Image (tube, rainbow, N blue to C red; front, side, top):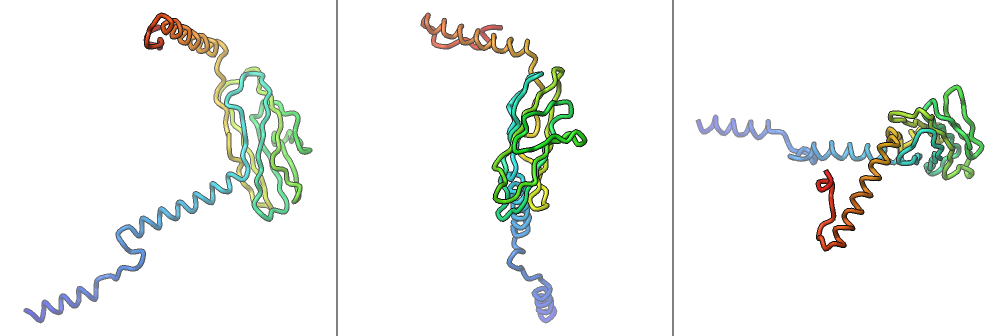
Length: 197
C-alpha cells in the first residue's frame, strides 16, 4: 500500500504541468490585454495622421470650411489626399492646387513631395437648401503608397429647425430674466423650468 501510494505520488509529480513565465493565474489575460492595447495604439496613431475639422452644426444653404490637418510619418517621400463630402453639396475654394473630381465626387490633392507636404489643406462646401438628416464625409490619405483613413470629425448632425432654435433661445432668455427678477426681489433661487410649466 505504501509503495503504491509512493508510486502514485511520484506519477502525479511527473505528470503535473510545469508553470512557465506566462502560465500564471493572470498570465494569459495579461497577454490578451497587452495585444489589444498594442494594436489599438498602432491604429490610433495611424488614424491621427490625418484629421478633419467640421463645425458643430450646419444650417440649410450654409457655406463653411472643411480643414484637414496632415501629419505624415517620419521619412515620408510623397503624400496624397482625397475627401468626399455629401454628394449633393457644392464644393469651392480648394486650397493647395487641389481639384474636384466629379466622377468620384471627391476633392483631391497631390501628389506632394517632401519637404513640401502641407501641414493642412482645406476647401469650402455649401449645404443644400433642403438639408436634412445626418451628413457624413469620407476621406483617405496616402503616405508612400500606404493608405490612412481621414479621422477627426466624420458626420454633421441633422439641422435644428429655425422655429425650434428660436423657441429654445426664447425659453432660455425667459429663465434668465425671471431669475434676475426674483433675485432683485430678495429671492434666493432663480426660476427653473419647473417654475415655468
